[in-house]
Length: 250
Image (cartoon, rainbow, N blue to C red; front, top):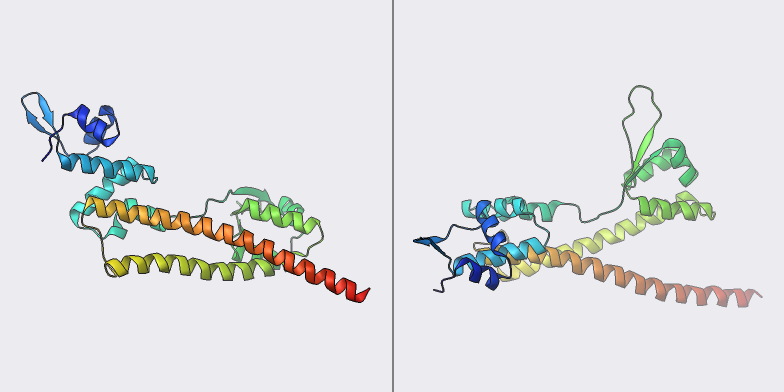
């Protein structure tokens, strides 16, 4: 078994001696063996440091990592360990939100029709704030970019009902895409292990966390690029069809 002094350990792990001491103080890294005044670290410390570095790169905080290691040592289910639970259960979307009064929302979408507001709420685009007493209504716009895009279409004369019909259909199709992506990741794990499998080593834990993060990244990139290619293809096809019909009617 290789032995390291703190400077050698930090260099091998690609970190600093200050970080090594900080991880020890937070309980992320076991204390070294003492030989007189010299601290001796092992390959187990090096492996733990590499796992910590990996998890930090994947967006974990040191608090998450501490809870993650503690949970794994207790034998907790992986999904119940805070670090991974946050990654699995936290929303993947990072849409910008904003606040608007009822008048501002009407200005955006040219409507205060309760049916439209109900549909926008159902699709998760807005949520009404609780008004104290009889104060004016206000809304949280939960997806500012989408609502602003729809606002521009409304101002060009596209009916909001038609926009929301399309939104519902696209949401339904993309729900199926999400199901396919997540199921494929689950099947990959069960093919190698089984349903209910949880990691038992730091290396397996880091792999599982990385798997979730990379599945997310690959899914978002591939869906975005496929959609752009299909939009290009369909636009060309329908433009040719539209112009062909125009020539026939000329």
